[in-house]
Image (cartoon, rainbow over all chains, first blue to last red; front, side, top):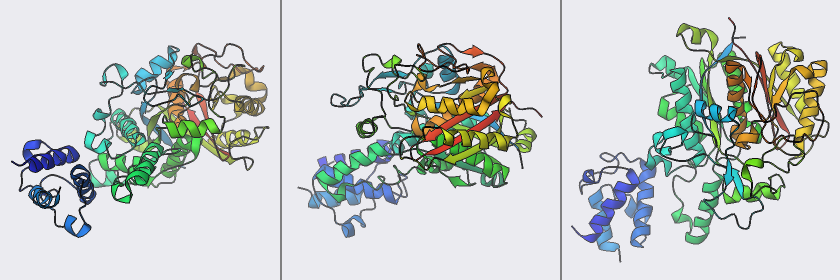
Length: 78
Length: 420
C-alpha cells in the first residue's frame, strides 16, 4: 500500500470515527462509512490540508470512495 | 390552564456532572472556582473561573465521551455537549424515552444559551484570516448556532414536538423553562425538555466581559473566595460553565404514566428595564415587576414565598435585587430565605437560570435552603435571611427563582411543592 493510501485511510477513519479495517478502497464514504454530505466536504478539506493540494469542487464531486480519493491524490498531490 | 410539573432533572456544573453530586457539594459549602489553566490568562485582569471538573466520568467528573460521540464533539462547541449531557440525565431521570410517533411529536425541546459557540467563532475567524475561506469547516455554522443544542438533543432522542431556543443573556435558562411550561399549558406539547447551556470560559469571552468591568478581579489568588454575593468585598462576577435541563410535563400525562413529580411550575413572569444595555435600573423596578408578574400568574401572595434563589451575581446589582425583593415581600421579608448559589458555581450566564431553578426544586424536595458562600460581612442590612455560609433546613413549599440579563431582560419562575 502506498504512503498516500495509508494516510488517506487514516484521515478517513479519524474524521468519520470508523474502525480502520472498514476503510477499504471500495468503501463509499456515504453508503458504507456513515458520512453525510457535510462530512464529505470536510474530508476533502482534510485531504487538501494533509497533502498540501487543492481539490477543485468539480473534482471533489467525483471523490465518492476511499479509492477515488487515493487515486486523485496519487495523481495530483505533490 | 393545564398544570405543568417537573419530572426530570439534569445538570453539568462546576461542582460536578450530575444533579445529586452537584447538590451534595453545594450543601457541603464547596466551591467550583479555580484558576484558569487551559489558556493564557497572563494578560487578562480576571484569571479565574468556575470550571466543570473534567475526568473519566467517575466521582461526579464530566467525561464528554459519555454524552456525545468523539467524532460529533469535534464538530460543535462545548455548550452543545453540555446540553446533551444534561438532557440525557433529565430524560433518564424522568424515565421518558418516547418511541411511538405520538409520544415523539408530543415531546419538544427548548434549550437556550446566552452566547453559544463563541470559542468556535473566535477560532474559525483566525482560520479564515490565516488560511482563507476554503479552510472553514462545513460544521462551523451548525456547531455554533444556539438552537443546535436543542437540535442535537432532539435528534439524539427522537423528540419531534416544538423545537425552540431562547437567547436572553443571563435570563436564558429561566425564560426557557418558563416558555416551555407555557407551551405545555397551552397544549402545544405534553412534555418539554427545557433549559440552558453555556461554555464561556475562553479568552474572547473573558476579555469581553472584563471590558464591561463585570468580572471579579480582586481574588485571582483565592478563587474560592471570589464569588461573594451581598458581601462588602465583592467586586464582580465569577464566570462559570455548564448546563441545566429539566423535563416538564403536563400533570395528567405525568400521573398517567406514574412519573415521579418533583414540583409544579406555577408561575412565570417577565419584564424589561428599557434603561441600559448592561446595568439594571437603580430602583430595581424591572426585578420587582417580573417577580410580581410571576406570583400573580401563580395566584400566590408574596407572603407565601419561602425561598428565593437570587440572581445575585456578586456585583453592584446584588443590592438592587435585594431592595426589589424587600419591596415585594413587605412585612413578610423576615420569613424568607434568599441565597445566591452563584457563590459556589459562579455565573453560568445562559445556563444559570436553569441550574438555579433545579436548585430551587431540590430545596423544595429536601426542605433546605442552599447557602450563600463567602458572605462574611454583608454590605447592607436586610430582614431577609441570606443563608450565609451554611445551608438552612426549613419549610420550603414555594420557591422563586430570579434571572436578570444584559439588555434589561428579567424573568422569574415560581415553583411549588406538588399537591394533588
